[in-house]
Length: 345
Image (cartoon, rainbow, N blue to C red; front, side, top):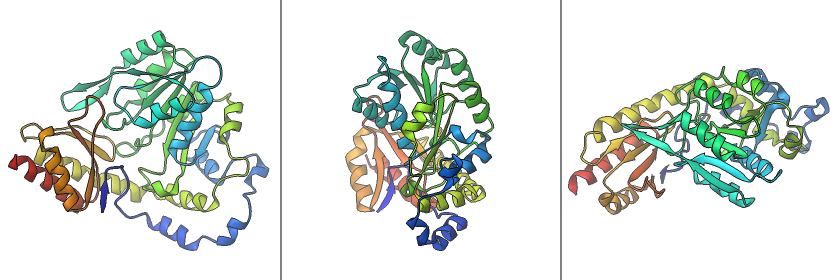
């Protein structure tokens, strides 16, 4: 089965990651980490502090990015009387789910379809936040499933014009596929104490099975850090592999660059077909509008070839496909199959 439905990694890990796996000493699992004796969370948080220029105590670690998102939402929606979280209209179902787990109230702000992309209206996000006054404002950049993102300048404008009582949670799980710029992170978290930026090794670094997420937050949240941190440290095998992955940016940047071939193939082969629209994407997936009447035939054709893609069911996106960007030979099969079914209708 070729899985192109959950934005996983269909390429090879870096050589450094492979070597870290092969050379890991199982005896290390017999002992807790001792870095807690230095008042630090992990060798990973220390390394991330060095890479991103954020103080180690403001680095977050979690069991995947979802753990950081979940801890943030659960903690801040259960402190005080404000249980409202504001999320994008078209976004990952998980945001609403984790809020519901603590009886949170989810409100949505719109994303707008503009030609071949979706976009945030920054002024409207600011207006919604000031009017609703949520405990948490969630921004996804890039957003899943629409594939659009915010610029650092837009993030800064939002932060500057909303109440400091609102925690801003930015899900940047897919942020590295187009841009390698991370210089904006340290200035933002140093300036705004109400900001949390969540990232992960699951997407750009292609290690979703490792379950290692990381993030950064503004200063002054000791109680949240106690809530989110692991008293006895983190998985030492995962730490070793994570350090190797973080030291392999060239390998993963090459993989990310290869995905542009996928984007261009879809645009060239499907973009001009009747009823299709290929949206711009800055992530490792692409959203494609298609004639919904071919859905059953397309599902059958994909299943016969042991391929899985995502058929969207979200209100307003029911006539869209979300396809993970994989290896060229995989994407060629998907593109050819869609084109064949579309021209047979």
